[in-house]
Image (tube, rainbow, N blue to C red):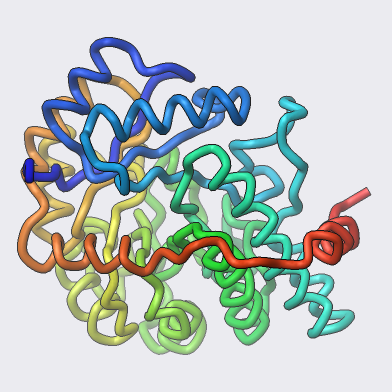
Length: 339
């Protein structure tokens, strides 16, 4: 079997270019991630994901997306090919009125969303967001969080993730070990969190510990000065080994957030090597710029050792789509959609 690259790549548009097909065939990235620029219709997406898998020669190569609902919905408006879905906070509001109704909606709507994804050849979703928003934090998390209350986040995130899993879609918990205190948008600059470690352990880490059995997790490009003043979690051996792996207890595949976000500095080769040396299993590069993709691929090398084992375990966690009550799921969706 051809060696698999220790990276997940984006692509530039709704159809693979000749250069992208050649790149994927030669470098064999572990997976592909899609954005709105890649998504036009279910049929077009099915062709795109199939072409990617044909290029790498692996029918089970994972295809990722950020399909949270609300303002982070890659399949959706302005296209009328897909339903509109609410931000995670809608489930929290339903939960406040009735815990049972909130949990049922989170699971059933996740199952509906999984149906959309699987139909398009997408097998992994970067959901749930386990960040606990704090007063004064940047709105980048905002209503993407299920609640301000830890217990509600834990319950709703597990229910939502279960809905995706029931539909055959692997969940990716994010942004480990927590983005809820960040006062900056890591897409634009590096957030620095000065909270005491005791505060982080009491508030930020527990939702991740509660879902430490998830198959995959995405890191936060955030500096936690109480743990490591020198590097964000993505690039910090101390955060990954001491907090993510040991204290939180996460044993699944650890992927970076997007290396092209401005929170990280240095060349793409430097960022790639630093993330892998710190303990990430695979790096994520999203913007579809092929020169950058080449640099990431060359620096990433191949999946091997524990990282390869975790990648195999993650894919084995996928289930065949389970039967569900679509009528009830659609009622639950209508109940949580904003007017």
